[in-house]
Length: 69
Ligand SMILES: [Zn+2]
Image (cartoon, rainbow, N blue to C red; front, side, top):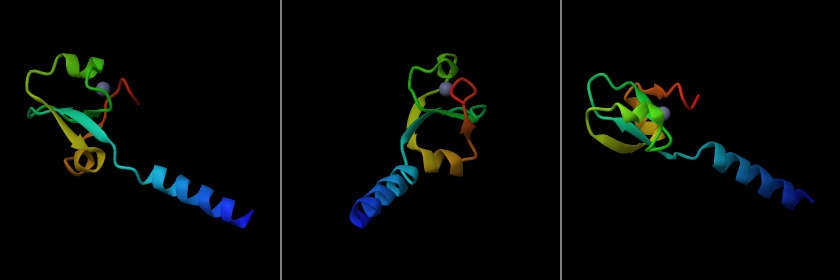
């Protein structure tokens, strides 16, 4: 029983600390990050859509896109 609990805790912790890929519009005005490449918020992106990790996006000062919040 204890082993199972440990395993559960481990899975929970790793899923919380996961660093998924996000997409952002690489322009000066782009302040948002998106979990999906074809998000509404990226449709009027005039620059390049780049893929970074969530951690990188946050380090750049990006915030979650309003459509996905
Ligand atoms: Zn979005």
